[in-house]
Image 1: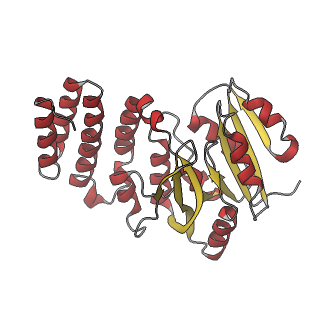
Image 2 (image 1 turned 30 degrees about the vertical axis):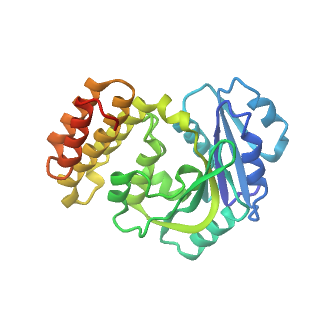
Image 3 (image 1 turned 90 degrees about the vertical axis):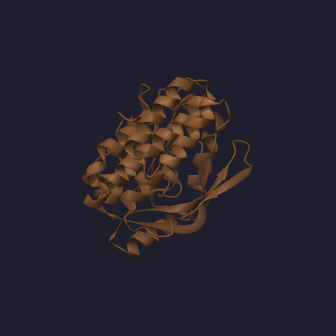
Amino acid sequence: MSTPRVSIVMPAYNCAWCIDRAIDSVQAQTFTDFELIVVDDGSTDDTPTLLARRGDALRVIRQDNAGMSAARNTGIAAARGEFIAFLDSDDWWRPHKLAQQVALLDAEPDIGFCSHATELQSPEGVKVGEWGCPPDAENLVARILGGHSAVAGGASSVMVRRGLLERTGGFDARLRGAEDTDQWVRLAAAGRYACLPDLQVVVTRNPGSVSRNREAMRRGALDCLDKNRALLPVAQQSAFWRSCRASVLADYAKWRYRDGERAAALRDLAQAFALAPLARGRLILSLALAMLTGRPV
């Protein structure tokens, strides 16, 4: 069996409603030297049946439900390609995605990973926005930790050199909510990133998914900042890092307040103010005043 140039890793969990669209978009790629590895992460719907109908067009690995990161890591371990690309089952690609990324990585060997500008759609297929490339990729570790969206398109957009991924390690399954951010930070600390401006990736935005996992996302975002602090330039490991952490606390304080958890929200704001009174103080105090007086935030 010949070794494919690209291994595509797709985690799948109870995704019968969208899995065919994702697989069809892979099979429609103009670049065809790839293998598709689908990791069925303990699905209980019709996902296994739909995958079985595909026959030898893909490799299916089944495991007990362990979460997105563990499923990706299972796929990475089974991958044989020089490059590894990720695709979540509710997202899909336009036909030139792989071709453009392979051409870029072949032309510029110093690029370790890349992604595409991305179209955002509702579950009904309505365009709701775009996720564009960052203005530049300088000091990318700080950009990612400061905003969590510097790598355009997220996981469904990324292609990475296998060697770089092996050196930096797989997805951290202990994190729930910021495992992608954590992975991109480690890749950015070890290799160069580039973004292609063509909208070759479509990501589904499901409004309900954020609220269901909000506390896990909050904890994951804070843990990601803590564990990757040392990857920042030395000059940004103090005030800048504290400002990033304060920003995360303030953001989730707003969600907690909207969920009726005012005391917890105010505790978050107090922690945020203690971390960054100069950089974030005005924002934090205005949020606290609004919460104390019952105004919306």
